[in-house]
Image (cartoon, rainbow, N blue to C red; front, side, top):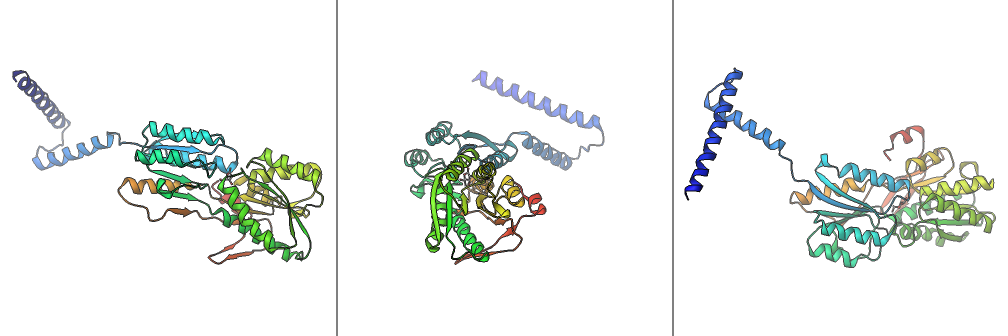
Length: 371
Ligand code: GYE
C-alpha cells in the first residue's frame, strides 16, 4: 500500500514538473497569455496535434491476385497497390498467385492466420472456393470479390465488383453483325476462329457465352475452332500460328484479351496476311488497355471491348463503408465500360437494358486513358 502511494506521489510530481516546465517555456517564449481560457484552448490545440501524431490503426487487407499474365492484370495490380497503401490507411498483404488456383486458396488461408480485417479475392477459376470461404466466414473476416466471379453461396462474400462478361461477348457479337452488314457481307460465309482465355475463368465463360448467341443467330457464321491462349501474348501467338496452318480463308479472329490479340497480330504479320483496317482478317479483342487501344488506333485491331481494371477503388469504398458502420445495398456491382473501334463511323449497340455508342480511337482518346 505504502509502495503504491509512493508511486502515485512520484507520478504526480513528474506531471507537475512537466506542467511547470511547459508553463515557463511558454512564458519565456513571450506573447503567450497566462489568461486561463487562452491556456485551455492552447492545451486543446496541443492535444489535437498529439492525436494527429499517434498513428491510426491501419486496416489489414489481404489481396490475392490472379497473376501477371496480361496488361490488364498489371493495371489491376497497380490500382490495388495505389488504393490499399499506408497513406490511405491500409496495411496491404498482396499475393500474386501466378495463375495457380491452389496458391489462391493457400493465400486466403494465410490471410486468415494473419487475422487480416478484410480479404479481397480476384479469383482465377469459378470453382473450388466453398471450403476456404466458409473458414473466413466462421472467423468473421469479410470477403470481397473483384474481377471474375465464383460459384458459391453468396453469404460467404460481402460483394463482387467487376464486369458483365456475357454482355462484353454480346457487344462483340452485335458489333460484328452490324459491321458485316455495313460491308454488305450478310450472306457471305464468315469463317471465325476464337482464341479464348483461361478455361473455367468467368471472363472466358461469359465472353464465350455472349458471343455464341450471335454465332447462333447468324447462320452464315461458322465458328471453325476455339482454343485457349490463356490470356497471354505467347498463347495468342501460338494458337494463331496453329490456326493459320490448319485453316484457310479466316475472316475473323476473336481474341478474349488484348495480349492474345497482339500475339495473333504477330502471327498474321509473320504469315504475310493482311488484317484490321487494311482488310483481310477482322481482329476483335477485349480489355481496351493502352497497348490494345494503341493497336486499334493503328488499325491493327478492328474493335476492342473494354474491361475495367479499376475495381480496387470500388472495393476500398465498400470497405470504408463497412468500417464506418454502414452497409452495402447491392451484392453485385458492374463497372462502367465502353467499346472502341478503328473506324471513324459510330455504331450504336443496343440491348433491352442498355445502349452503347462505339468510340473511334484518336490520339486524344489515347491520351485520356488511365490504364
Ligand atoms: O480480360 C485478361 C486477364 O479476368 C477480366 O483476365 C479479367 C481478364 C482480362 O488477364 O486480360
